[in-house]
Amino acid sequence: MEQYAVRGGNPLVGEVEIGGAKNAALAILAAAVMTDEPVIIDNVPDLSDTKAMIQATESIGCQVEQLGRHTVKITAKTVNSLVVEDDSSKKIRGSYYFLGALLGRYKRAEVALPGGCNIGLRPIDQHIKGFRALGADVRIEHGLIITEAEQLKGNHIYLDVVTVGATINVMMAAVMAEGQTIIENAAKEPHVVDVANFLNSMGANIKGAGTDVIRIKGVHKLHGTEYTIIPDQIEAGTFMFAAAVTKGDITVKNVIPKHLESISAKLMEIGCEVEESDDAVRVVAAKPLTHTHVKTLPYPGFPTDMQPQITVALGLSTGTSIVTESIFENRFKYVDELTRMGANIKVEGNTAIIDGVSKYTGASISAPDLRAGAALVTAALAAEGISIIDDIKFIERGYEDFPHKLQMLGAQIEKVSTERELQKFRLKTG
Ligand code: EPZ
Image 1 (cartoon, rainbow, N blue to C red):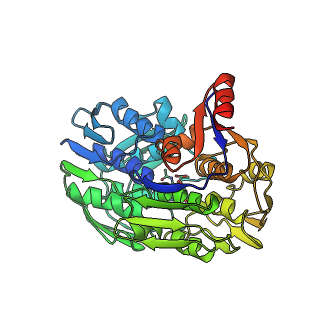
Image 2 (image 1 turned 45 degrees about the vertical axis):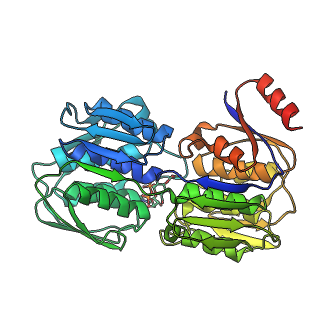
Image 3 (image 1 turned 135 degrees about the horizontal axis):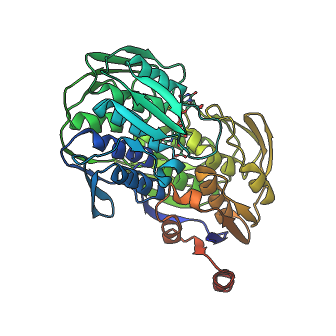
């Protein structure tokens, strides 16, 4: 079994290049099936989740050519099935984007009920409500969500909760519907905007993405395109917080600083210096961290995908902090692991009350999900002694070359798969 071995204590210092946004890539890879013409997508992060999406496009008959590690060419002219149920797509959440993409283009889709991180209930009622509003029939049979329509017709749709997934899925389904669709209470996340820009580059007519009202005028057909995915806000934020917890000095490069504003603001509040330039942000943690309160909210609020990372930092700050999770109801499972490293955190419902401690100590821990896993790695990097992190498959869903990027910043981290490799790591770093 593969694990990360970490010897903590080194401040992380240097520069790190951020890759393409995972959650934009998942939707864009699905949206590529909406035209017969070739689509070239650049800055696709090389992750197990994106690989699963690419395999799913192949499983329905698309031709996929990997033009480079981060560039993929997809031609959907040869699509021969509208059923997405291969094994890898069942494990990820993003596979639900085939519903909107295939329904929009072919007026029919059958997709296995989605997997993804276990962070709460994660219903899909708003996706279904949106498809039905466009005139589609939706039912769940034998583990598949089946949606079909004679014809899709634009409509006025009010989403009951702000949801990234439903906003993107309904937007894709509406792109070739007859007439105008208006999505109210839409999610405003950078990746919603990126997917809209991608679809517009294929000939769609989407306006307002990035605000809470998105207007889509149906077009008959989409065409091929060449498109570069935006940088990953959460990968960048994770490295920014890694600087804070290890008392380091990290410049995250190839980012859009505007997308990182809520993260930068919290870092400054807890005592870090943050310097922004055109496409980079530098975080310097020269002073002891101080406590604060934070509540996760849809964009432009503080992202739920950064909640474990800020909790790890606040666990090392002076005073008492409160973290409120308002998006997912079960996203504090990692706190038990952090407690094993010496953190003093009490969870009550969707709130964590954190009494800062002066240090963490290395322990054997497991990554319960993607972001919590990455946050625990940052805790291990700050901790005294060695930590062993299990279940790193979760972390690899969303962080390309994570140990390597950390090593380049001075971290002592290695992927090990045998007791012998672990012993070697102990000796080498001891
Ligand atoms: C996306 O999940 C991301 N996943 C998540 O990233 C991210 O945490 C989340 O958005 C919020 O930003 C992907 O893009 C693949 P939502 P998604 O729909 O689409 C409720 C990561 O670590 N809701 O915005 O599932 C839902 O329960 C992952 O990269 C409904 O009630 O999130 C939640 O409370 C984890 N009905 C809220 O809305 C619905 O039909 C927001 O969910 C849909 C959602």
